[in-house]
Length: 162
Image: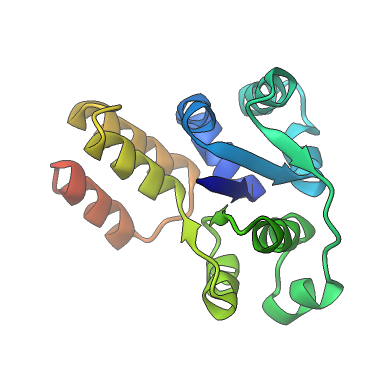
């Protein structure tokens, strides 16, 4: 499976220390715009991890021509639009958590996956224990902008109600 990440999902997975596991199991791509957005503050832990994964070859950076109309039509930032364009080019899945970008994926028929989906899938596959999955979901709640119902659903899926 090829996953093309936008900045928010990439950073969230780095913050909850799941990104390395994801990049070792899947083919992971990011547009140049996302690389710039995620590594421009090199003193941050998530930026350091993302840079290391790029340097190690587990996260591939690709150039992509992003149609300006994609940004304008859906209110996307440049990195999100570039991720969608690259996913379409590579016939990949978009790693995305932002509502406007998810809406654009639906309009264009692109499959997408969220940071929470990575956590619940890792728990289903035995990569994470239920306790580890709950901890990561709680950390996503701290760092992300999720509706409480999404967090509650994820916790229920891994075995804990709010």
